[in-house]
Image (cartoon, rainbow, N blue to C red; front, top):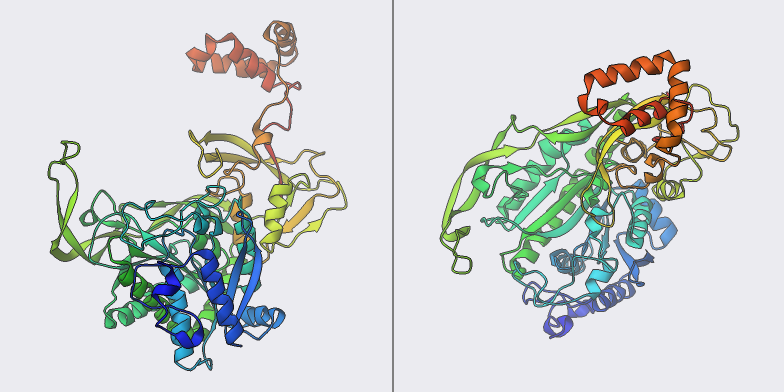
Length: 567
């Protein structure tokens, strides 16, 4: 039965039908029609078509407590305290879709109190293609609703892995939304998979070791504990996302590493206070909606009360970045450093499966337990690099430059071709993924050196990008090759690590002999490598390749990325 037919008894005066009862969520056309009705009936509610999705239908933004028109509303959002809520990135997880409608309905019913209300913006449903691909069977582990969308978008991309690589049109639209608003607080609504436990609501906050200290202090010392107390008073306890050390929660929880590929990892690059909320898949849909709604209410309420503290912490975070001389990346979990956390779980056992005849994991919700378990929430950077004053990116790198531009990165065209004191990233080694991941076969464990820039590396028309700007963290995260979500790691610069010219062994033998005669240094290096590496000494091609790569015949641009750096 259609969503609006089931829910027509609640908030009829608004023209929108939303309630906590029932086991349904709207289709995308129904959802947008509801938002249109809200915007048409209430001046304080605005609906904007912000850009296209991969599916061919637009992505919308609803703004509550704006300024009445797009120009003034977005200016108000940037200048005042703003909350942005993203729903339906995984449309099979529609709790936030329903909860936002209910929040708006409750706000209308309460008399539209806007005196201290922050600007509240919501993306009704981000993954339009996934919303349109609707069924009731694609999430086998989840209780309700009756029908829902699909995780992949029209390109079959998981959009919560696309925030840096930007393969989808959706993400180009999201970047437009995000930078138009510059939200102080960002929340992405989800439903979890994984272990069974007593909580309905879990959350992911940004890794505190990677955050600017002023924001980390505000979030971890005030916001999380204070919101936790408020939620507890409303019988809606939350717990960090249940990402377990081994198979079950009693082995300990691990704080999730929010890389920039994820929505909240991306928004935290710009010092938004960022949360992902995950309701539990095995709890009824009605209970999950209520938990998401309660979180939204408390998050908006806390933002309203602490607007001044939030704004101050963000300003100080940008100042902290501006004064930082080193960039830290490749954060790894410190498994030797652990805290403890009071957790409410269920007993588990391993009975023999009637399907496989082998032991299976089984939780018993009739046997709850409450005890302290390990909590691993500290990460340590394994890579440190001095922050350049400028990057220069070759004009031919259109995919890279376009992504930087849409994220508000300031850049200027280079007019001269003189190379003065510039260095260039030279890739020493890297590992390539064995299988495609979200449309890419990328890289990891990248090692680079700063090589003297070649005299012809800089061209008039290339782009100079200073690091002293608001997008500093994003610039470093994508242009420093070893960073986990760098454009190099995502495969946008692969052509530069492919050798273009080679040699034929039988021809090069005579040339190699002349090279060794006229270059004692190369001959000495070859002899040292033979003595140190028996396998190399048995391999004639490897020896010829060694001579070739140490000679003037070897192309000097191989493994040099079109990214120059100046300090």
